[in-house]
Length: 316
Ligand code: AMP
Ligand code: MN
Ligand code: MN
Image 1: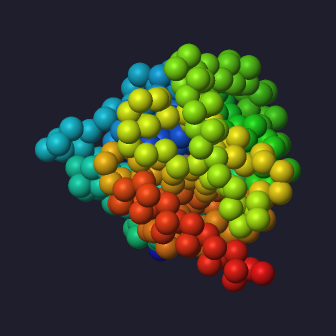
Image 2: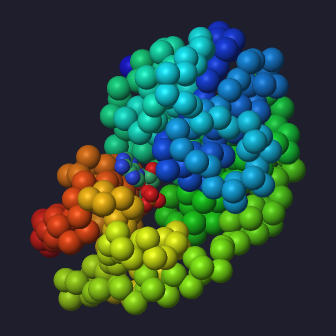
């Protein structure tokens, strides 16, 4: 059932033991909005725990509360009055879905949200889940502080490509300005995320060598098979390099992270890439989406390119 922001605030106020989670393979918004909400609810005197079913990259240790993020273990019972899932649909929260059986409040900005939660606050126009959490903090009547600000700024900045993408609206910028007033230090956040291991920077060159141009230059992508992924640290920034190629509308990367398991990232400058991601059970936003294809790199590449071509043809 979809609910309003006011009802979301009321639901949180009514519950005491609250567990917050976000998607596996967590990004700056998943981690930042989880921790930002946790700080706000603690200010209200709630018992709050954050569980994410994945490893949290060390770069995020710049965020206050990073060390309190738990990773669930098999068989663990996670007691709670309410499970809050942010920046995600329930199919991507990993084992938290089985280990915490409390009613679920879902707060999300993905237009592809599957609506499976007991209660859902969805704002597809919000640039980041962090932008919703910022609005929610106002609705809860909590005074913002540096801890909340650092976490929420992380979410806003990473999901908007540092306020460069088309999802950044006046609301986003006003929220960011307010977060600075609360004490956020953007330089610390960007410095923490910029730092890359030497091997990863070098591996960017390997990934860039693999970029191929398709559809007369309207599509570009790089596929890294399992052997390549074993040899080099997969560069997170590769999709950004594909995206900047002149004339390219759809950019993709395909990384075989485990044998026969490929993680796909999709970006576009115009076309709706959720149409491609949804075909493989993934999702995301019009201009940034992702999915997983359970095939080897070569087979997954063929399927992905076919799906991309279909979308291109349908649009032309
Ligand atoms: P990424 O390429 O991993 O940065 O993801 C781009 C966007 O697509 C983000 O908003 C993700 O949350 C979303 N996304 C990525 N993978 C999936 C998936 N398997 N299912 C649903 N959404 C996804
Ligand atoms: Mn995310
Ligand atoms: Mn997000």
